[in-house]
Amino acid sequence: MHSIGSIKKHYKYLFYLCMHDFLEVFYKLVSKKIHIKKSLFKNIFLTMDYSKIPSPCYILDEVAFRKNLELIRNVKEKSGAEIILAFKAFALWKVFPILKEYDLNHAAASSLAESKLAFEEMGNKAHTYSPAFTEKEFSEISSYSNYITFNSLRQFEQFHPQAAKKGISCGLRINPEYSQVETALYNPCSAGSRLGITADSLGDKLPEGVEGLHFHTLCESTSYELEKTLEVVIQKFGKFFPQIKWINMGGGHLMTKKGYNTEHLISLIRSFKSAYPHLEVILEPGSAFAWQTGVLVSSVIDIVENNGIKTAMLDVSFSCHMPDCLEMPYKPVITNACDEQAGKPTYRMGGNSCLAGDFMGNWSFDKELKIGDRIIFEDMIHYTMVKTTMFNGVSHPAIGIWSKDNEFKLIRQFGYEDYKNRLS
Ligand SMILES: Cc1ncc(COP(=O)(O)O)c(C=O)c1O
Image 1 (spheres, rainbow, N blue to C red):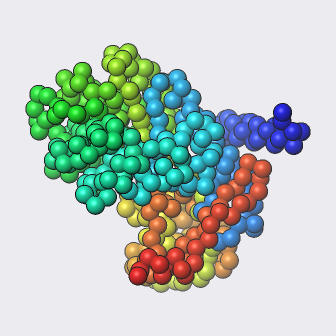
Image 2: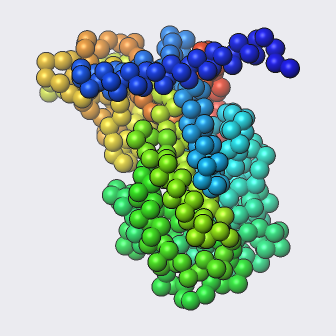
Image 3: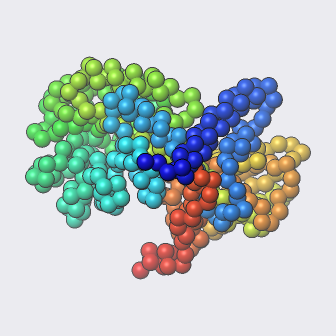
């Protein structure tokens, strides 16, 4: 029996979902006529009251998160693929109960810590792949994993006997030597790559005990890029398919991004499965789960000027808290700001670490910035919390959720002990 309260909450949630959809359609129609900046519009989506949120803080928007999970569950059900969360992108484990509601509570792990987290907090054994397993950790990893993928034939030979005794299904990571990812840092198929085994090193038959193949060659990619990759994989490795039970198509499937053709992905996987009905298909996206599901709230602490360049000094750091901005590199969207525009107050954003390059620019605002203003970096949930450092001892942003009931919930704050405990 549902109580009146829970029914009300349910309708309130449905209302939020409808409003999201309505605003999306409204945006598409209106933005064609008047050129609203995307970031300004997106601000309407977030019903967050920033005055209730401490600075700095990562905030997950529960409604946006559930919307992604709904879409991923739909792809999973229609395609017949198993879709698991790659922890390397997002591992905010306090929200794992929400994943469970969508039957999405399996994970791809890449270390002992990630496989243990899957076991402890999702209650399921992980699909684990690591570029190099160590003798010291393997036994524990294998108690938290039911699929293990090895990066080399040597690692397979070394660990397969142990894994097989525990009933773990073992696979090999293959390198199809084909990837459309242009950023070298994210391209696992660049010449001489250390990731995966090339077709010419495998000969004609897989070693006894190999039950699966795993490839990861995509990054924020479309289903059409997967289609091209699959053609290459089938051409180079298809001869091994009769010997295996599963194929893991890695991550990089950005199915929750606007414009991603999920129907094409579904039909691609369905036709793959009808060609190879004995193969279990696994996808392990990370970004897609947390894509556009929240922000990093920060504040202006100081404003400095040098040679006419104004820098807003923030209580967050690109290097420590938004490292992909410097690594990729890419310029994040700031709510209510736009790319540099002549005649408008324009600033660099400066991080609070001592790294000289810990800044990005430029953004223009409607008004001059002042000390205490909030700077909201959008889409800062994936590949942020999992990658942060305490370099320089800078304060780590808190972590919170803006709930579907329109309330701020603080999940975690960090302090001196967190910094100190990492160092000795
Ligand atoms: C082996 C593997 N699987 C899955 C992923 C997740 O990719 P994404 O977050 O782009 O979906 C990555 C990302 O680097 C990866 O290396």
